[in-house]
Length: 513
Image (cartoon, rainbow, N blue to C red; front, side):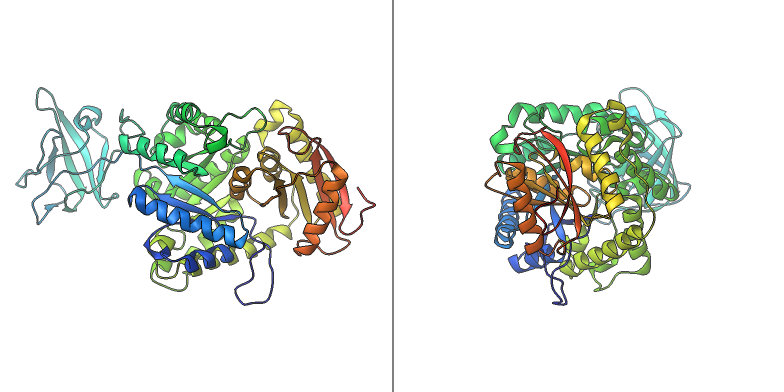
């Protein structure tokens, strides 16, 4: 079903840009989840950094129950924690560091020592080996900043750092080493346990933290191929030859990942611009430009991109967003993000459903302004280079839709590959994607502009498909009678990779197409 507007004025189209909401204590009741879905959330994020598997299971079941009751496809993404380097135990009062003060980081101690030259322990054994003079050492999300000035050798290897921005260090505060080439694995033992749980619970996506190189994503991909089955995991959005897997979203949150972005996107199913960690590890002034570059890169590869972190941060405690936050969300939409993410706003905020509604309204208004502008075709460069048929068909459909002023694009996309190619072509109208595969339908909810619908009985002929489409789009108010739409399909419809036909139809006129 199509959600109803919050003021009761009737049905509306969902935003083309998708909304990903983080799950947490603020969403403890099904009514809240129902409001969030009705307000525009199409994906939910389980943050494995917080909570037990039992707690995640309760929330996952609740989301799926509500989605089924609303007859609305909703995807669930599991966010792997990745490695965290932290300060070991400090005195109860903490240790205050002052600008100009020297600090020793010594990883082989269990308790930090205060004094004229404080000694801090770290949970990563190779800190003093992999940090070099001139490297930055950041504590507590960059609130405390130091510069390594000397590295001690011998049995008690340590790093001497000089404080540039001081503050209070307490137990468990995070340590960031943005200039150091760390050998710490991107996946911890806890992450692997989360992967097993995600496969068991049939999650729709996995987000991978602390990615630095494509090889790290490939390691997770290989593991998923070994443990996944088609019945439990389905496939990615890659088409007919795809293996059983859970699609991987690589979180771009380190300078190394930005440098190696092509190798990462090549093996990932999509990326997330994790601006919180990027703002710690990089010059914060470069984050907006980096965001735009990463969104463009994802488009070049034909992969979805999520923009995340602090988008409507003030709505954790306020019922309205700031003007700057509204502009931030709008700019992500203008950049071409497939999805925008809410974190603490929905996980622990006081107004989770209002945060979703605010994000939806921003997206809809911004998208309408884009629709009023002259647009040019912008297919993914990598797909053009490969000269594949389905991407070419999707590109041709864009020209047809533009020439006739189509109000809707409709496609049968069994595993989501055809919908993904259409989504990459910058349509400014919804793409209704049919499939008889429930997993593919849920996963298509991440794609820009794609509105997936599950059909249990596959039409035998393309003419039957056209009749079905005509009935559904008119009943649901997606178009008005007589309005043009572009219809894509293949034969048989439910065979991945069979998409080979495009036609123009007019709603309510079965003689066209």
